[in-house]
Image (cartoon, rainbow, N blue to C red; front, side, top):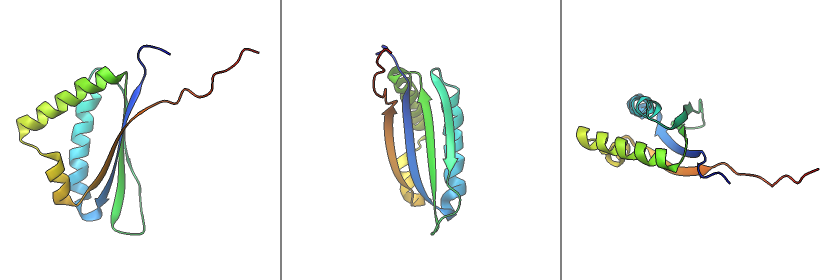
Length: 115
């Protein structure tokens, strides 16, 4: 196994339709910040269209070169939030957003045996 491997941060949000513009503005702002950071290999913002109720599902996916790159980015984001006086949990509560956060690694799958 290599010493470093991609690490994925995948966050899923349930956002009331009425809160979507304010929430997406913040999501795209942080996405631009993360995209410029060393070790960011890819970044996506996904939105599920339509649905049976007034909730939209928004997912963000960022692939980092390794855990260390993700940790540096996290610290930079926290510093920016502190500088702004921005409180993400309070922001999401005020908008009625439900969030799930996760860090994932690629499944190596079964080892291939020589033919």
